[in-house]
Image (cartoon, rainbow, N blue to C red; front, top):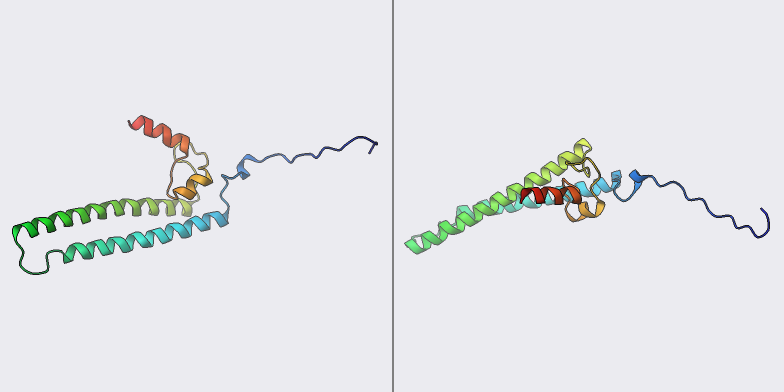
Length: 139
């Protein structure tokens, strides 16, 4: 090398697919464990809600006010149960996507869902731009 010349380092070409959005096996395994744990928690909560709703009104003679309160509480518990079922369905769909190799891929555009988004919402089906577009169309 000649005196006075500084050799500038050559940057390796950036592979767009190997950015933060690329999910490796270790990351997918981590998300799978989180989703399985959440599924277990949801199933436990649903079982507890069902048991609670069965027990309501089983404690002797009640007047009309008690009966109405119990009916209302049962309706609230059953609506919570429906919300839990929807959460369970989302978790199961995410686990299915892991199984078939489409986890982390936007169902709208086919592009990657950012790792940050998946860390916040493991059941995400859409990337942020597509979700924003779909929400605007839905309004």
